[in-house]
Amino acid sequence: MIYLIAGLDRRTFARWHDNVMASDTVIATRIACARAAAQGIDLVIAAIVGPYSSLVSDGADLSPSSAAPSLVQDEAA
Image 1 (spheres, rainbow, N blue to C red):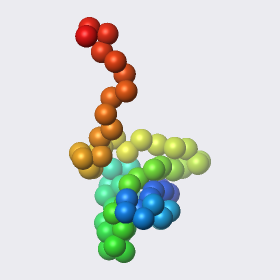
Image 2: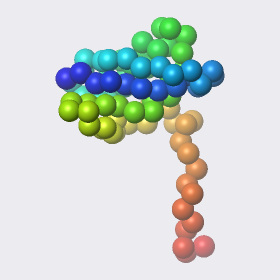
Image 3: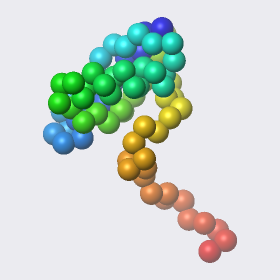
Image 4: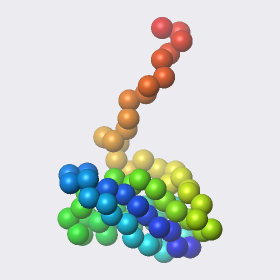
């Protein structure tokens, strides 16, 4: 399957995109990150577009440092 991977360079905020052929979104994301790294880009994935222009989830967080803090308050507190 062919996916369109779109993202930004973490350092310069420059746009980046590439078409990737892979069996699933996790592999497509890894391939895209490797291609971007080869170009000197620290890629942040913004979107993965699958067949019929559908946005799909990658199902994996490849960079644990990029986890956003929770904005939802815990009601128990």
